[in-house]
Image (cartoon, rainbow, N blue to C red):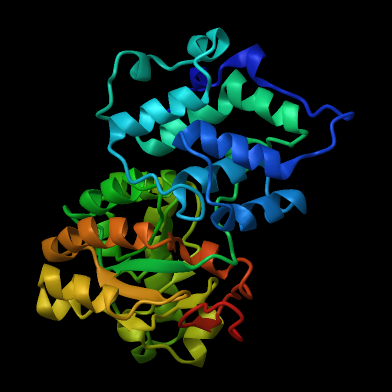
Length: 352
Ligand code: ZN
């Protein structure tokens, strides 16, 4: 994981030259060429240029889309080639090399994600200077919102965990720079606090699936409150905050549940049936044959077959240009969510 020394210090903080007229098109073309080693297909980068031009994204956000989305150049490369591309894009100048983290220098790649390498790249003098040259505000890495609400996105969701298979899914999400939402139950949360903390750390969202997988419609308001609160306690211990979304077990809710819920209720519109089939290929097919922009996909991270399926689904959806996002990310820019509201999908231009 990253440490504070990752930031390369005095060299790296370019400021936008007020005399430079922002040139979004030139910036995107140069950065794409630097990373991909070839000039971009103009049609593919049009949206990135437009967003940069109207100020809705920063230089770092534009670079992220160029590196990770198929709008720009789809980083369908092995880890070594990926790192080589980013080093070349950083110009390999002296100050960039000084900022080069030792794990890249010495090729310690095991614990390194592509997101880590990207974070290093945008902190280099080479990248920051490019922003100055083209009059582009680089923005701050930590403030980056790398989700484009207009581009296709899917919310993968996992219930009933965490389990011994959750790390497999997290590894894959992390490798491809993607996110998902994990609706945890109390009796598993207590044994897998590390996985909850890790998921939260890498940008996934943690949801509440009740303490005991209760059918909330059979309980009175006090019972509902207790079922929800006992999970939040664990989530808070692992992440420093409560669950931001709730999935009622069996999808069962009523007016009492809506009233007591202090977060949005998230249902689904694509049911993989993974709990029933426990079959990797069937789970893959149920997603790949039906999934569309804005879908919420129901799965369970307590089955090895589901985790195995993710090793195919996550790279394939990413390669098809989908952003794999959390519930909060898919809702943002597509109508949002309210505590107690119930949400089944977030199509573009859908009425929520
Ligand atoms: Zn469940």
